[in-house]
Each structure stands twice: as C-alpha cells, then as structure tokens.
Length: 446
Image (cartoon, rainbow, N blue to C red):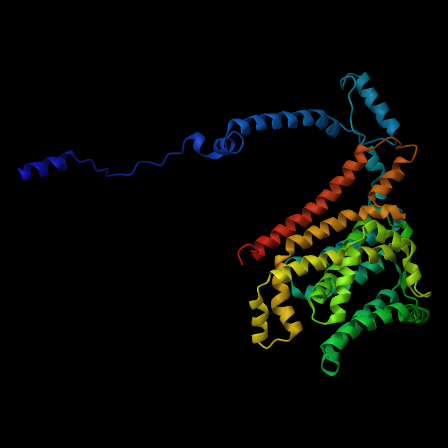
C-alpha cells in the first residue's frame, strides 16, 4: 500500500524543470506610472493639490512663455521695440494686444551691466583676472588638480588686483611682502618668542607695515623703476564686475579671518577671548548697511593721513569684517560639535596647539560647517547689492541708470530678470559645489 501511495505521489507532484522567461512588471508597479501614482496622486487630497498646481503652472507659462520667447532683440530703444511689435501686429504676424519682451536693452547695454564704466579698451583685464581667479581656485575646490598650482592661488589676489586697478606693479608686491612678514613671525618667532607672542607679532607687524610703510616704500620703488599699466579708478567699476570683486574678495578674505576669530573665541587667553567675543558680537549686532555707511563716511577718520583707501576698498574691508563674524560663529559651531576625545587624542599624540588644530581639529570642524559656511557666502554675495546705498553702482544700481535714460525709460522686467538669472546661476553653482563637497566628505556618515 505504501509503495502504491509513494508511486502516486511521484506521478501527481508538479516540479518545474525549466525557468520561465523574465517579464516586465505591471505598468502601475514600475516606471513613470508608479512615480506619478506615488508622488502626485497617492491620495485624494494629493491628487487635488496636483491638479491645482498643474493649472497654476499652465496659467503662468501660458502668459509668460510667449512674452519671453517672442521678445525683440534688435532695437535701439524701448520706442523702437514698440514700433516693431506694432508693425508685426499690423501685418497679422502677431495677435492684437500681444505683449513681448524688449530684450534689446540687454544687447544694447550688456557692457554696462557687466563692466560698469570700465574703459572698453581694457575689458581684457577683468576677463583675464576672472580666468586667473578661476584657475587659481581649482586646486582649492578640487583635490585632483596639481598641488603646485597652489602657488598661483597665493599669488592670484595680487595679480587680479594689479589687472583690475592697474597702476604701479610695486603696490601689490609691497602689500604681499606684509604677508611674508606675518609668515616669518609664525615660522621663526615661535621658538624665541613663544606661540602667543609670535602670533601677536604675525598680526600686529603686518598691520603696521601696511598702514605706515607701504605708501613710502611703493613711492620710492616707483621713482626708481616706474613699472606698471594704466590705472583705472574705482569709480569706473560697476555692474557685475563690482559685485564679483566685492563678493569674491569678501569670501576669500573672511574665511581665514573667521577661523582665527572662532579659535580666539574658544581660547583660554583672556585678552584674545574677549577681543574675539566683542568683535563678533558688535559686528553681528549691527546691520550691514550701517557698516557700509561707516565705510563710506567714517573709516577714513581712523586711518593715518598717508593712507588713501578709496570707497570700494573701504567697502571690501567692511564686507570682509562683517562676513568674518558670521563665518566665525559657523566654525565655532563645528568646533563645539567635535567630541572631547578628538582634543584628548591630539594631546596624547604630543601635538602642540597649532599642530592639533591644523591636523585634527580644524579639518573636522570645517567639514561639519560646510553647509553653514556656503550659506554665509551665498548671503554675502547677494548682499553686494546693498553697496548701491553708498554710491557704488552694482547691477541694480546700473539698471536704475539705464532706466533713467530716455531710450530705456519704462523698462523693468527684462533688466531684473537678467540680473536675477545671473545671481541665481552664481548662487546655485555655490550650492551645488557645497552638496558635492558634502557627498565627497560624507559628512553625514563620519
């Protein structure tokens, strides 16, 4: 009986002897249909909101796409734009009451929006400075670039200054020598003077050199060998050239100053700690526009009579100080987020203060602070538009000057859209690079 049952089970059991071919999942379970169902119509409320949003998008695009893409690019004034538009309507090419953008204002005044009143024959100088700045920034932003290019990174600020402002070549060289003095104080003064005195000397001596000796030394060298290019006054800077110069200078200079202030605020040394705290709190407690007016009206009273800082350089100084206070607080947050064991680990390795900060503490603190630092930089770049209140012609200021002319009086949206698009590209680029750094350093996982 058992043999019969066993034989029957063997014959009735079904065992597949070959695999079925692979089949695509149902349309509603994969691909775009799944994404639409889960993200746009996952519930009744979500579906209603999706339909309303689509209607709003359709309404906006249906009223703006034609205005944007049918715009007129070849005209000498707003009146010519209107005549061309009316001509097309009379010919029946466009419907009656059609409104189109007059992009001709951009093709007619692009040089002023980009360079301000910078002499047209010298446009190559800011363009070359921008190229050098981009090349010099590459080894800082990307680690697969040759490290020897860091030499160009150190020299780029002085080269760009010389190209943009022109004049004697000795000015930037003598100013650069001040940094050499500060580096020498740190490098060779630590043993005989101690870490504290050498640090103070590295700060004080370059400041004294820049304030009292740069002018006379530059004058003497220039009288001996007058080498240079034609000078361009700061009043000629304007448009996006002005925004880039102030924004880039503020971003580059405020970063090291912010690190120093953050370390000073955490220092156990009473004077350095209190100075850092007072500086940060005072700067952060007053709006930027007040500091810009201070730079415009009062800063000259605190400088020696021989110092001749024009308005643009004074604004750069104030913007740098303002940004450094915010950067310092962002970096201090990164320092506070590090566990105590990191400091104790550095002590156990026998590292001194600067070695511990350079090799262990600051890299981790800066990695944690990347989102905050980039956010501060984006805010600083956008705040460059505030310089219009102290008489400098930023892109917004130049749009006002263009609209004040009889040719382009009455045009608004085209200029503001162009300016906003340029700012968006720059800020979006910084944001994307920040996200690239976060992914590369895996800040959320280590």
